[in-house]
Structures are given as C-alpha cells and as structure tokens.
Amino acid sequence: MKKSHIIAIIIIAVAIGAILTTVGDSSTYASFAMATENPGKEYHVVGKLEKDSALIYNPQENVNLFTFYIKDNEGIIKKVLYHGTKPQDFERSEQIVLVGKMKDEGFQANTILMKCPSKYNDGKPEMQEYKAQS
Image (cartoon, rainbow, N blue to C red):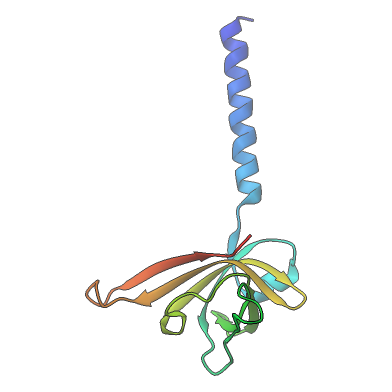
C-alpha cells in the first residue's frame, strides 16, 4: 500500500470516530416523562412557565440558585433548578427551552433559552440564552 492510501484510511477513521462521538453526546428534545425515565441523559425540554407557581430566587441566601415550575408540551409540570442568576424578564417569556438532566429534586437546567416578545423587533419573538454557573 502507498503512504497516501494509509493516510487517507487514517483520516477517514478519525472522521468516523468524530461523527460517532458527536452523535452519542448530543441531546435531544423530549418531555419531562422521557427525561424522568432516563435521569442521566441530557435533554432539551420545551415548555411554558407555570405562572401560578412560585418563582424562588433569594440572592441573600444563594445567588446561584433559581427555582421555578415549567409545564412541558405534554402538560406535565415539574420543578426546575437552575444554578445561575434569574434571567431578566423571565416572567415575560412566551416559551422556554431547558437544557439539562432530571435529578431526584427536579430538572437540573444547565441552559435556559427564552422566547420573549420584543418591542424592538415589530412584536416578533426574540430568543435569549442563559447558561448556568459552573
């Protein structure tokens, strides 16, 4: 075999390995029911803020803990714990996408994506992203 063939085979093997690793680590959109069935796997959960439930953010106690309740697209309501500061205009959000994992005490969100109405974009929703503190 020529050196160029060996190098080409190595490059193809590395590319296949990178693709498989990326697919294996990617999270998927799911409901709270699916996230509860697989507590160790990361999911994107889409839902709306449950406005009748409490928003708990006490910066004097813990500046990096924000707790609230979300109703997913299947109607399941779960407690969400976000280890970061409360996002600005959180109550105004039309739709929320949570990225995280289900734990015993609730859904642990690493990232919050909010779809909010904007007065600057002719009333079109604007997407905002917030990441948890590491």
